[in-house]
Length: 77
Image (tube, rainbow, N blue to C red; front, side):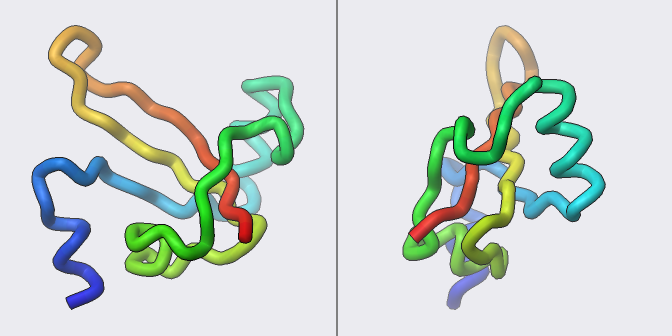
């Protein structure tokens, strides 16, 4: 039942970044993790993908104009 939420058409793709991917993204953005928008550990999608506090999640939304819009969130309590 947990993963059913990931199949809903309104839920964008969420991916937990590994350490090297997170470092690369932060370098590209010239940002510290605390500067990213936050997503709570209690969020149903965060639970479903197994993300934990301190992880950076890549969110890929479909866009009619840009095809994809990518954003990053820091998992936090």
